[in-house]
Image (spheres, rainbow, N blue to C red):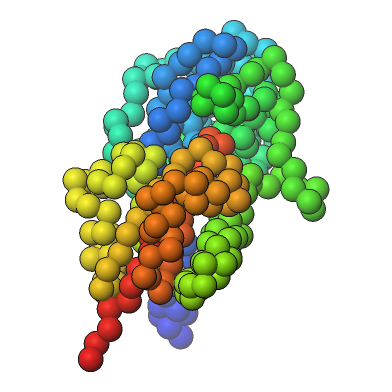
Length: 309
């Protein structure tokens, strides 16, 4: 009986272990290429964008904020398996801070499973492990330590302002939220394009989720390499091969900088070539939009579905 209980206990432990591993699935982290200023001084950080949010290496940020009003120390608590931050305390460099990242390569990001304490109180922050280092969501740290994080759209840079209080971005429900809802933006672009086609006596295009998946991949790639050639060197339509999407003919419209579905659709319509694509002989559409540091990249894939006779 004791052996049976022992065996059952081992099975339970293994199940819990494998469950934890399954929850910590990796996602793609894209290098943050925007300039970053701390108190008006440009600093080169090793940072990544994950799902539209910027993540900074914790020790790099602590190093950069040394001597400011929002300096903080960083320690690892082995007993608690947690990172301990102390506000107002000078950061003690360990060596290796601010040495730069891996260049322009995407990286695998794994959710961290340790806790984070600030002044002996546990705080809720989003943390990923990238290349063996801890990367914290910049706005989470700004909120916890009360320094402001701002996007300067004119200069297209991130400004970290330790002498200013954190200012959250609020949505209609009063909670801090993302700057935009990508799904709503995609749906609105499709609606506006179909409205214009109907005005011209053309059939509306059918929104296709798989083509939108391809468009979203391309929207993210535009941040790394602008144009119709992909970062790896292939033409834009090679994304269809990756997702096993069949088509008879296709075209691509891209744009960057417009901050709403209305403005991007209007800019496409004002361009002779882009408008011709929109009014072309296609029957399906996929739209992607990627926001990074308040700057938007737009992708539109128009497809004439392959017909099998």
